[in-house]
Length: 509
Image: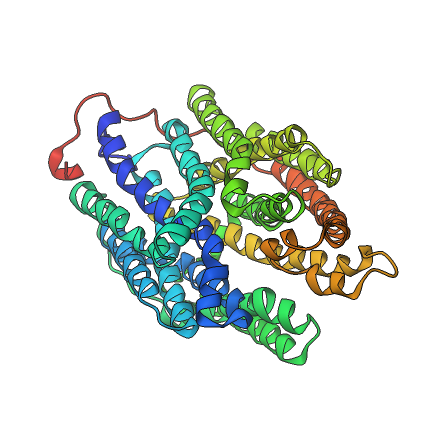
């Protein structure tokens, strides 16, 4: 049976992808636009001690629900579940813009995350439904462009809205973009799946969400704030591990498991998930510190740091588009994550050479190499996993791949944050003024306003601590390089979209 019965022309595919890209832009932009406005928000609400929760709440819910969206869309169809995800995200955005306290903002960011998890997972699932793996590379560059655009546009828009309008507009801007995405996808998205009897594994879903949530709370909140050995944090970690162990036991018996354990008997799924987790751990964990280097050490504003990261965006776009075209042409994919993880490992080692005096052209080269590696890895892993999956499991496999990558990024953020904070005091010179220790962990704006002598000591300690962060990241990316060699390469299914017209009744066009 042909898993891609409703072949679409390039024009029809691009119409559908335009709506999907807008939806993905919503989720990607919201990860980068908020940081610029946070000093203003916490100042207005007088709640500096809760600043990390605005990020944690979004990350927690978006990561935890990702596997649920894939399975539910396999059972009930992509379109209604995708439209639900957009609606929830827009509702959360509107509520965030109307928040009158930090507690409300944190709660509404969690609502946003519930929708964002579906947008990120289902976008690539729908692509897997409508485009055969052999042709999928042609289009993956467009989504690399979305991630690149969001990484630059986020700080720029966040700075502009905060300075000239209100921080609330960093959330309200989602509404017109989301409305267009909702209109396009609700009109043209008709992905037909075979009807079958189904049931929802409610207990498995509850165990998975609860277990992942508790572990994320430990890694992203309790550990960094209370100490990794604190009794309350270890209780969270232990409870999370127990719940996940119960989840695995239950999934082996469930009639319609949320994450079928049989998927792990597929070597391609297992190796791509493991590679994605390790890549997420190293890259997403370490790379959040590049803007910190630009802002704290080089004195760039948040808006300027977004522009200064253009070389990384260029690297992502170049290799994402090129690898996609080559995959379509030659029908092979394994070589790309191997080269990509090698490039990232080299770039992590090069980042250990960063100094206060490092010229921009040199750091730009390092950023370009990192972006080039990312472009060769991330979407190729999704294509490989989807190609090896049974069409009935497309949503589950895609969302699981996204889930493992997000989990890696979450753990990496906690790991490298701990490395940075533990190494900062080590690099403070003996006899340094007491105000240095007070300000070394302060905001970039605070550090820029310090007297020159104290600022030099602070930035010197900071850059050496960052070197240690990248030194820890390098062997992790090397592990990803080794894992990439174990990915089994299967022939890519399909020969591309038909050049004729598809049936309008099937496509909804």
